[in-house]
Amino acid sequence: MKNLFCFLALSLILTSPIPLQAQDPALAYRLQEGDSYYIAFDLQQTTHSESLDSEEISFYNLVRVEYLVDSVDLDGHYHMSLRYRDLLISMLAPRMEIEINSASGKNQMLSEMVDMLEGAVFQLVMSPQGKLLSLNGLEENFKPLADLSVSDTAIHQVILKTLEEAYGPDAYKSLHNLFVWIYPVINPMSNWTNDITYHFNTKAVTMVNRYSFTRSTEEFIVIQGLGMLNSLNEFYETTGMGKVKSAVSGSQTYDFRMDLESGWMIRCVSRQRVKIETTILESSFLPSGLKIPSFTETVFEVSGGKVDSKEVKVKK
Image (cartoon, rainbow, N blue to C red; front, top):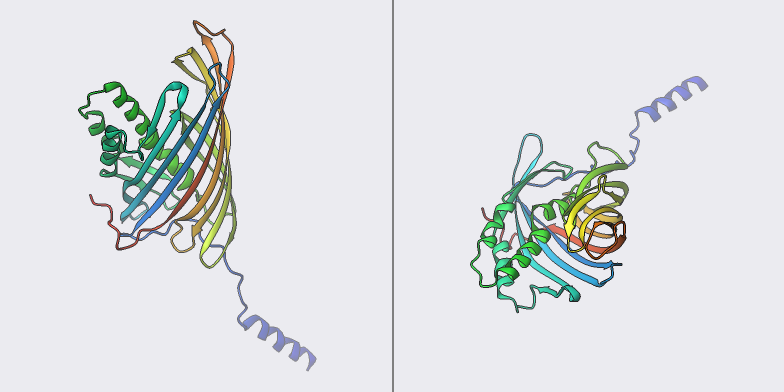
């Protein structure tokens, strides 16, 4: 009888429903065709150089990127149309006599070029993890700006170069790699690494981003990360100081909050510190071998979400 009781008890345990532990959410995007999303980037940057004419350069950049999901192919890749909205750029370098502020309304040429960028559409294809597979149309959007009829060609070139560095293909790819391509290639995974290309001061450098899935709630996923930035090769160029070479190094922290349903960005606070060490190779007024370090600190405050159906979507 005792053996029979044990057998019945064991059978009851094995056949009774056992509550399962909650599984970790899938770390990937789950976007719907026809829906629109946005990411707003708020970037505040300060650069200090230890050169003889040292000065502090301040740079502020605000941009909202809207993404319309045109289609999702059989591989799960997202085909999207994008446009820039709410562009605001400001740069102040007193000793270089550079002061650019698109919000002031004082420079009609700058305002016109910013409006032209906001009215243009470009396209991308990305994987469910956010990896950028192709980017088309953005470079072409700058051609009308370059062909603009102006009275002061020197100022026009300064503004054009500034806008290209802030919103051109390399700039967008860098922001995308930093804040959109954050998910692991393989699921499930609690710790992973993505190697990205990041353009800093027009220099393409490699950044190794290490991420950790921290926790999830009923509404969002928390992912934290640390990026290490290092140029594998030195950059050789001719500047106002003469012929120089430079090396780039730095780090960046990430604190992501991602929507549980769609996987899209809700918020991220990120801090970056970059050092560029420039070595004089040949100069008419500086000794060869002189090393000049400069330090740039950037704070990114990024937010995102789904575009309200009442708002105007991206039009082709």
